[in-house]
Structures are given as structure tokens and as C-alpha cells.
Image 1: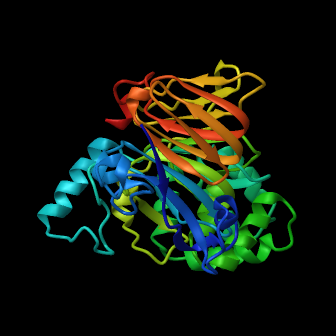
Image 2 (image 1 turned 45 degrees about the vertical axis):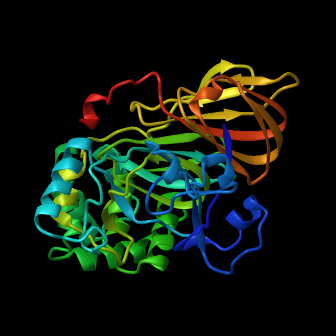
Length: 385
């Protein structure tokens, strides 16, 4: 069964006013459209275009429940600095806040469900800039030395005495302890005269979020600029922030976000500290797999989702989702043939595909993203438990 889907873009202040509308082939609303959701998440379940096919179910969540959520993401300015919990942390936090009687929609709620929220981001724009994970302290110290001998910056360097100091330095900054506001102001001032990408980033962050301690925290993190087709994978505990760009995002169907900066929303410092993984990591790029002609697959370390990107060559490209799937066409026109029926996808259109369609054959000219579960990881990886 193929079921056409649609939705209304999510209006967040950091979103683009044109990109998502152009991708969907619809008039721009005039509002900052940040995300377009495809899935069964209760925050914005996909609408079913022809309910006759689904026994009059009007939303995809009335028909099924998917463990993943597919999005178009269009960021014109930075998203919040954030991290996501493991399943065990989410379950414990969800139960604790339920016991305290905190409403699910309360602004001070940390856990809105009992699920983890790993995610991947596939870059579509010519540049997609992000912060992702702590880098080694030696690299951060070398970067700070480029700001000269300023006493406040020197004090920060002195606090960074090895990778094990990252937690204490982060806690000092995020808590806005004594001296932090002065340090942020000085770093912004000194960075204005530098041309390195990290210091240009400081100016951009300060323009959007003046005096936010996240401006200095950003210098502790890996900064990466993705090119089209590159993918970041962000597991539980990884601190990150998308800075600007357009991409396809695929994640577990959860809304658990622990924020740490660049936001007017709730920031729970103790809970964020409990969730974060302070071990330095390289930029977490996810390597592609090439199972067949015209198909590229990105498989993370969790069973909740995988992403296939299909661009048919002269002959049909074939891919077998491991279960239910959602298809999104971002360019061209593609005919998708399954075991029982077929569906034609054009730019901006999406469709739910039931598991009984088995192997899918794609023909035509264009690009289709396929979100489905991950058969290579039937159980959650150790760091997600």
C-alpha cells in the first residue's frame, strides 16, 4: 500500500522563509518555516491525502506507529545547543517528571516521552554548518592562543588542563559563574578582529544570542561544514547545534531535548550535565554503504532508523526497506513499484509504504529519500541502553 502524505511546516524563529516552501512547490507563508515532519510523532503527525485508502484514517498516526521521524530542516540561524538522553535516562526522567505531576506540555518539562533521540543529518545545501561533540582540549587551547595574551582568555586556558577538565569548564560556563559574562564579552570583542572560521562563528552566534555563554562553549566543540551528501550521526550524549543550512534529518520518534544555550526555552543545567558525554570525539561523520546501483544507505548504531538515498541510473534502482517506510522526493520525478501496487513521486511529494510492498523498484530521473528501520541493528547499542 502506498499512501500519499502531507503536513504543515513547523514555524520556528530560526527557520528559512523560502526553502521549505520551494521544496514543496507551495507558496511561502511569510513565516520562518523551519521543519517539515513526516511520521507519526504526536507533535505533528503526517496527514493522509486519500483516507479512502486507509479505512478513513486521516493521519498516519491513526494508521500505524513508526519508530522514526523524517524531516526537512532549513536553518537560517543557529538552533539551540542541545543533547539527547539514552533510553534508560529518558525512561527514568519521564517517570520522575510524571510522578512530580509536571504536565507533558509544561515549558519546564525535560522528558516528553520515554525514548532516546539519536539523529542523523544529510546535508542538501552547498554548506551545512554544525557544532558536534567536544574536541580535544589541546586543540581548543591552540585556538584560544590565537586571541593573544588577554588575561580573561588566559584564565580559560588555565582551566583547560586536559580532556578531564571539560566537564568542570563546561559547568562553570553554562552556570554563568563568576567571571563568565566578562569572558564572553571579551571573546566576542577579540574574535571580531580574527578571520578564522571559528571566530567568525563567534560573531554570528553573538549577533543572534548576545552574551550567551554558549558562545564560548562553542569553542570547545568540533565545528564542521558539511557538503551535499555528507551525513552527521549524533548519538545520545553528544552536544551539538546546527548553525545554518538545509538538510534531511532522520531520528528516533522522540521529543526529548536537553538544551544548553542559544534558546529562550528551559535550560536544566543539572540534567544536561547528567546526560552529556564529555569524552572528546572526532567529527561524527557517518560513512555510506552502496548495496546496489543507484542506492546509498546510511546505517547508524541503533535499530530505530536508517536512511537510503535513491537516484536511479538508466535501469531501475532497487531497495528493500526492512519494514514500513516513508519516501520523500526532493527532485525530479520517480516511479516507485512495489509488490502490490505503484506510486509516482514528484519533487516535494512524500508517501508512506506498507511493509508488504517488499522490494521497491525506482525508475525515472530524480532523488528519493527512504526512511525505514535498521535491520543491521536488531537491538539497541550499548550506549543507548
